[in-house]
Image (cartoon, rainbow, N blue to C red; front, top):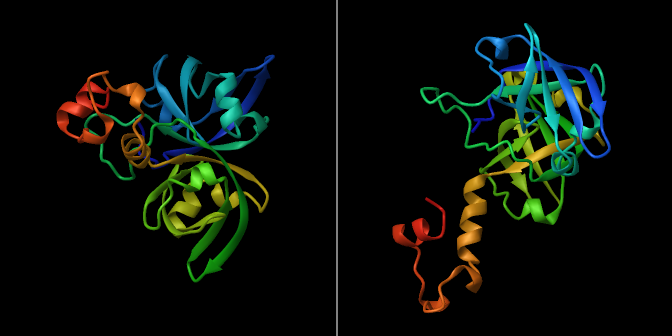
Length: 222
């Protein structure tokens, strides 16, 4: 699990592409303080597993599903990426619950400066917009941000100078693609609200089912 608080901006050293998957080698500094083989690192919001490492670089495999769902397939040598280690059990929860499982992508529509802040407008699909609410949380390229506006076509966030200076978002331009992960809580609530008969025992009546601790445990949510 991650929090969406970016620890550092890393650099893609090399990309090795296979038939449907790829392997990335990335360079950093801060995240190597306690890195081990098998650790999880969020790279532009996508949870990747460290498969090889040395002093300042690590390698991770990117499976076909991740390439389909994210923008990682567009990375090239020299690309800058946001990186975050998995949250430690005794760590501070500075952002929100981020799984590192990308739901899809969005396209940057515009940047508008307002005093010290910068408004970023991102257009995305109805499937992703469904779970975005005003003042809720959204993860953009691994960055935990608060939604300031949303309609049926796009959403907007406002970046403070610190976030702008410690992430890659403002290095991008209109038309660029970013990774998006919806707030996991909203997805679980939607699953429960539209629970299908196939998930119930034959003796249970869907219309009479109430959400309780027992119901959550029985259906795999606890």
